[in-house]
Length: 606
Image 1 (cartoon, helix red, strand yellow):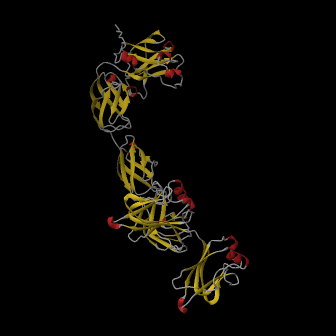
Image 2: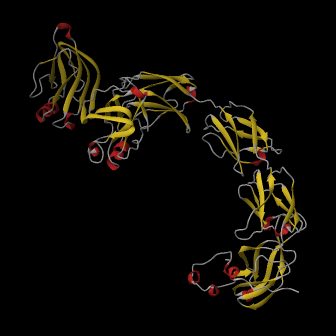
Image 3: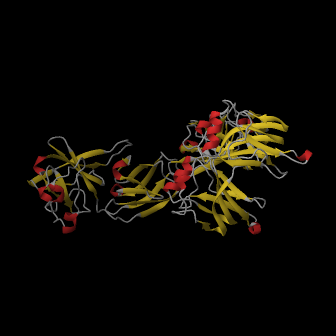
């Protein structure tokens, strides 16, 4: 006789939502579950239950159900779940009584509508017979193998849990009978305890025992010092379990696994670096091998102080023939291969106009570059002092922030101006560092987070780019921070235009520098108030030296002297241009520099 049991209030409240697409309608907010549209399973019970007994199923539109099916136990290995139909009787559109089939196993309850849709419960059917496990074999196993669990009523097992919460539900067992279940070991499984439960909500896990699961293990590599693009072989055991392979700085590299799982073949990426190759299984267990690839190294750079445009910089090191780009401070475009001389041990290039202070970066590929020592450029440009004082900066514990957050109008600065921080390193800790940052201490674009200072350093300079200026304008100005130094002054260079550079010696009023006369320069473009500066070297061998700034006929410009004496200490002669001077040069042949006993090296406007 079949016994009918009253379903408990708890079982009725275990509402089970149907699968499929759910529209956002007023039904979603309705507190009456029986107002839902279509076929829905709202509850079933009692649970756990015994096969052959009946259970009550509540829901909506159950009169549209043509079939009730349960997961079916099976006697042979099968890759897919099979189902068994149950007898049922309809009480009304909201309730039916279902007889539990003898061969069903734990899993989801399913109802099939007359329209062919399958509605699946969220919670599992569970059974009341006591599960007794007597054996679990084999041990060890390989992920993908079959493990057998034998005993009595083992088909009441609703879930097998491998170590670290890797689960297989009863509906996915490959064999499911009263005395034996067989489970395919998930690829994510790893060595540890195996447990089971009956599949009910909050069910207790009961440990079966420990199971040893194979894991990938690399034992060596065919070549530990490979060339870029070279095919290498990684040897080991269970390497068929490897799902991803990562080189240093290059993730997800394609590879081929031997059919016996004892080797992997892979091509060394052209943009990797020396380090560890990491192979990861679905279990997230990893195995590694180390490689060393040919990477360039830096040894020396010369010159580093008072470097001028046009000079040749020479960098020495190892494997420098692999360098593809040379990045210069304050120069927008890096030097590409072919724009610098190169050998395995040496790189050289001519310093371009506009190069700033800083380290030169040698790029081998996207993921590897090296820095040289810092280079300081020679500058004759006058400076505008933005701040003076004395601010000590400890171990990244303070800053000189007087030029931040409104302390200076950075929109008045132009690209190409040189920002110079005058400083005194404190080497009592053996090191000192500086950063030029925005108002939030973030490094200005194109500058390093950390710039090392030496005991000999007296200043740190950066040639400002538009990106740096924009950053200071938009994000709080300039903050100077770092470790162990004192800031004493901050300046920017005053912009100037070089009109002429070279070397012209002027004797005893018998020669001139006339390259800027008679069409040599368009003086109509000059504005009153600009400063004209002549850089020079006096020759005091005769005991005196004189200079005149004249028009194209050598006549002194209005407001200037016929003869201006020079001393041995003079390095330049400057005059602030008036409109009368400019008109004279425009109308009477431009500028002639004449006098006695000096060499002209450069003429600039600022």
